[in-house]
Amino acid sequence: MNNIEVIALKLENLTCISENINIDEYIEFREYVKNNMEYPDWLGDFSKKDLGEMLENSSKIWVYSLDKEPVCSMMLITADEESLLKFGLDLNYKEVGDYGPMFVNPKFRGKGLQSEMIKELDRYCISLGYKYAVSTIHPDNIYSINNLVKNNFKLVDTKEFKRGIRNIYLKVLDNNYVEKILTFIVNDDKFLLLKGSDKDPQFHESFWYTVTGSVEKEDSSLENAVKREVKEETNLEIERIEKLPLIFEYESLGKKCVEHSFISYVSDDKVILNEENIDYKWCNINEFIKLIRWYYDKDELGKILSNKLIK
Image 1 (cartoon, helix red, strand yellow):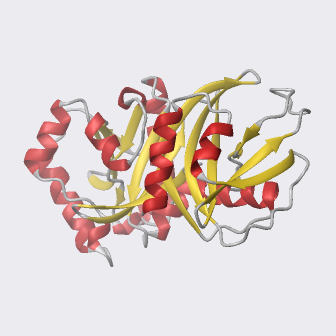
Image 2: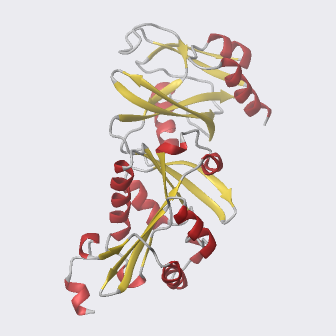
Image 3: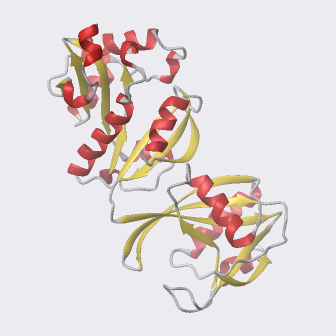
């Protein structure tokens, strides 16, 4: 063991097997790790049959070892339309890499190996031309969550799956993309419209819209970005946020943007504007849909927002 301790425990120092994976040995390693976890349900439990089918369908497993002892493992799962639908992500599945189970031998925990595996998966996905990476984590697994957030993943939603509740984290891999948020603000049954300044660097004109903005590095989740932008533009405090099934890709000021949509509920209607907007008004759903400048299907937007009011 002394020999192991003196070696810098980096992936590059370990022996890696990523082809012709012995599924039985992989499962044995995974179960050993699970049996030594305080909360074993945090780690996935794909069956031998599942793993075989996934590997045949272009999913990939890496197992890293030192002196023939397994140290850690990571997995990339081939995304498909069904999985992204379950995640609530309106993205092209061919552009998404699904980061599967990552686990570390208990003897080697605390060495930063999970963070290294995330970076290695990033590099691999970028080499395949993927624009996004998604990963699901148990909400109480603060160790993995911290590693994802440290590596620029943003929390986008929390959902119940067959194996329990999971947080869904998303990351934009393409450095040419700017990640943005858009949120509709509701107080009782009224929606907030904001009239932008004609000094807007993109449009140079005033029109009715809603709160939008870029996700900043300090935002640990998309919801935090929404709360920050709403506070900055309106001084309102959000009480509840829901993600909407709308993700837009467009170009703005020479940058490619991917924009996630939300609906935010507030209990106060007293708005204080910042320099980005010159006027505001609360209006019912019909007036809101009529006045907002919307570049997509207004009928679809009306149905989505109306359903939220009914709920």
